[in-house]
Image 1 (cartoon, each protein chain N blue to C red):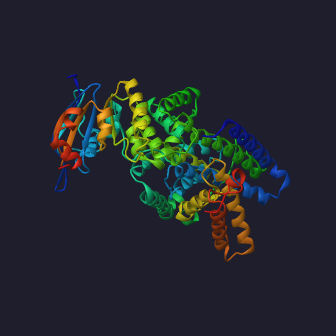
Image 2 (image 1 turned 90 degrees about the vertical axis):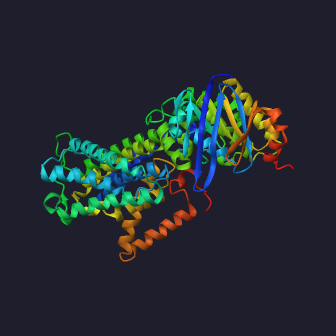
Image 3 (image 1 turned 60 degrees about the horizontal axis):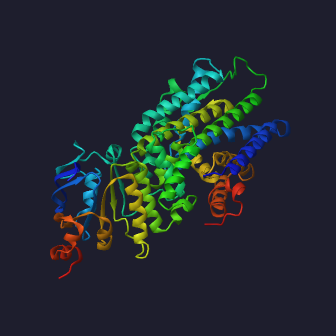
Length: 316
Length: 249
């Protein structure tokens, strides 16, 4: 339970944080601003991961929905000449949700490592399809995303418009995520993590709770993928590769699962550490990231987010 | 004898060569408080699992208010009005006592799929506090279940079942793991709350003192069979029953 005072403090903090992020284009260089936008868009995907992690499920294949969202934007722009975000983004959400609903019927029968591995396998199937069907997907070359437009207007500075689009949609997704976590379904998902027998003996279905959460998670991650496609301007099969999924779980652990803001904090930290590690130590950047995660796990076992809420957390 | 609430007809359940429940027939009337007693492994918990549909019987039928519920599964038997507590309390240990109760209330009111409205609605929270007060847990609401003493967990486990407004409540060893000093207060709390709800109650128990004090009727199990069934005081005085339950010569 979050006390009302804590909740209003969090809301004020969030509004202040989003306001500061909104001012960044005036203060920082373009590449830093781009990095922040990319981190926020990927943070949206990670929020989808966190919704399932709170239920004790490890979605090691969330890149499936990330890629579906991204390729929806890619196909529309590249094959149909539709760069309109108000068309592509809702479509990315709907397609991701529909795929999640279909695959969820299978996945919700599994728990633990079986759920993790099966979700990973499904994302790798998409990866293979994207690589092999060249005429359809562009193979390993992928598809370029051209002609970004918003509400029928092609902006003179698309990067800036995309930045604010990402910011607004991230805030919206965080709001949806917060509503979900505080709702009966959100609590039931946490209950799944602790005791499915009691859920069944209350007359509820753990499977249905997981399916509903999985669809919401897939839809959110699809939106994140679509935003990343606009930001990068290109989609490729690597988006569905297992390394992508691994990154999302990595960031979820890094940020923590106790708040809807945690994935954003984790994602921003991840993108900056990764980019600076690549810059200063191009051959050992993975080692730097690994050490960073180990330090976080040791000193802030509940994730970087708890630096803000419980700054003196003890090492495990 | 009141109308049969539960009618167990020639139910057997075997695990490989072991017949855990062996051709058991038992009829329980509305409003009865029945204690099932027997040694470890005599088939008491298996019978509860068969009634609630957690296990399928090898043969026989379980009829609840005239409807065959054999092997329906816990979710469907719960929806029909059977609720259950466990020897090891089945709770959401990482959540608070209040969260546990709120989840049960949301499920019972058909709002468990709601992903938009908040769980902490004032009407739901008031109802939860009212129930916790009735079960003597009012001051524990904000406490994590993992930090609750065993007696408190037992009571909470039963409270979650009572929220469902069941017609029949099955309790598996409600005082096991509770200290000898606390066992009567735990049972007093439970039984007084249950009497208010006029719930047909079946509880499994090892403790004859508990049986004598709280059950109206005793059913004695030995090696998967019912060896005696009747008023508690009469039954527990019989030497063959004491031999089966306590191992007395």
